[in-house]
Amino acid sequence: MDKLLIRGGRQLHGEVRISGAKNAALPELCAALLTDEPVTLENVPRLQDVATMLKLVRNMGVVAERGHDGSVRLDAGKLSSPEAPYELVKTMRASVLALGPLLARFGEATVSLPGGCAIGSRPVDQHIKGLQQMGAEIVVEHGYIIAKLPKGRDRLRGASITTDMVTVTGTENLLMAATLADGETVLENAAQEPEITDLAEMLVRMGARIEGQGSSRIRVQGVARLHGCTHRVVADRIEAGTFLCAVAAAGGDVVLRHARPDHLEVVLEKLRQAGASVTAVDDGIRIHSAGRLKAQSFRTTEYPGFPTDMQAQFMALNAIAEGHSQVTETIFENRFMHVNELVRLGAKIQVDGKLAVVEGVEALSGAAVMATDLRASASLVIAGLVAAGETVVDRIYHLDRGYDQMETKLRGIGAEIERIGA
Ligand SMILES: CC(=O)N[C@H]1[C@@H](OP(=O)(O)OP(=O)(O)OC[C@H]2O[C@@H](n3ccc(=O)[nH]c3=O)[C@H](O)[C@@H]2O)O[C@H](CO)[C@@H](O)[C@@H]1O
Ligand SMILES: C=C(OP(=O)(O)O)C(=O)O
Image (cartoon, rainbow, N blue to C red):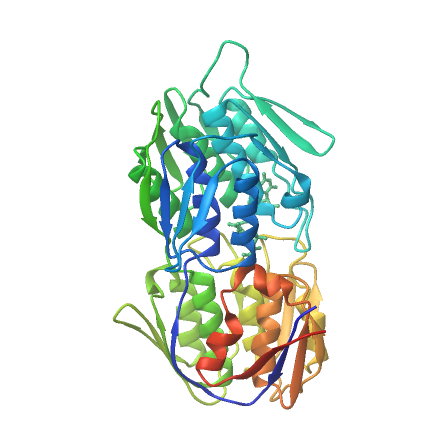
């Protein structure tokens, strides 16, 4: 099993190219299931989750080819089975995004329940309830969501759906299903993340009629069929945010090319309040950080609030900043697993339910630590970059799920980091 070996204490200087967003690419790969015409996605990040999604759609009969230029061409003209088996779904929750498109286009879908995962129980009841409101008959049996249209119907029907909470993949599943439904669908309490707007833009290119993406009410007028398109995946705001925290913590001056400042406003503001200089530059964001930063309290909430996917990385920064901070996690019930590992590196953090209280220390010291989930891994890498001596991060398969060549990019700006075998 691969590990990362980091020798801390180097400042970071230069330029990093931010990749396409994991959380946009995954639903967009599923959106290709909505049409029998070829779809080309550009700027698709090289990640394990993307490889898993390609395996999943190929397993259904989709012809999917990766180009050398970061593009993926998908042809879902003929499908052998509208099914997502447990073996593939268990490694990636986002597989549930196949449910809406399959049901909308083929009138049936069998998708394994994703099950719980490290950061929380993460049910998909809102996806199921919304599709039922659109007329689907759904049973959950032997760990599978088995969905079909009632006899005599060949399309879902538009509906007014208010989800009990804001759900990102729930909104995406219902949005994709609604594009081919009969009549109008209104999604109330919709998630507003930039990845949803990007997905909606792709669907519009395919001929969908959508209004209100990026707001909490999305209206969709269903159409009888969608066509192929070429779409460029939006830049990954969480990858950008992770590099921003790395530079803020380690010190240095770095330009993140392709990063979108408008997608990271709350994080950028926190970094500025901490004392870093953060500016929008041509096609990117520049961060300059010198000296010890000031700790910042924050509370994770849905977009446009502070992203839960940035909580662990910012906590690593707070761990070595000056002063106390309070970090409140409101989205997932078990997303503080990095805390014990940061403590192994010398951080002082106490957790009480949804609240972590961080007392900034002057220095961390390298140690062997274990990654427990994707963003926890990133926070350990950031802590390793500032810790004195060597840090070895184990179980980095979590990191590989969602970061495109992280260690190569970090090495490119001066970090001492290498991948080592077991
Ligand atoms: C592939 C992808 O885009 N993943 C992102 C997506 O995950 P994901 O879409 O799974 O997260 P949700 O927005 O659905 O989850 C928000 C909250 O709602 C709960 N919930 C959700 C659906 C449901 O049917 N029932 C229910 O109870 C969840 O358990 C969680 O507590 O948004 C999260 C919140 O920004 C991010 O951390 C993930 O990186
Ligand atoms: C939690 C995340 O991803 P996923 O929903 O794919 O598990 C994430 O990207 O931080």
